[in-house]
Length: 135
Image (tube, rainbow, N blue to C red; front, side, top):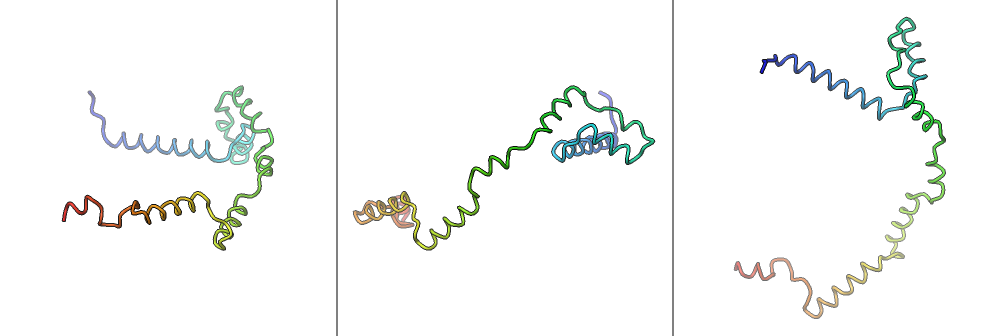
């Protein structure tokens, strides 16, 4: 096993880290088509021809651009439903005023009260069987 100096490994990891960060920014940032990449490269430095070389397979990129050209349907889908925040604020206001109650919660509280009156409810804190054994 050959000995590698630690400095070269650190430089490699920094280079890899920079490459990964750049790839993530390109992937999850704004999507660039090959035409936009070439136009921006020409505007930045018109004499540099290395930036104009295609970096991806053009056939697969055509498929991706065909999907990107389609109109977004998110607004059409969202327009079918009422605004979520407006409904939430109305429900909170009605609940605070007392005109809206959760039926399941009120039934649960009613049953707990009924059991407590019969002596079957939960014990108070520190009065369970386990707590009494320690005394």
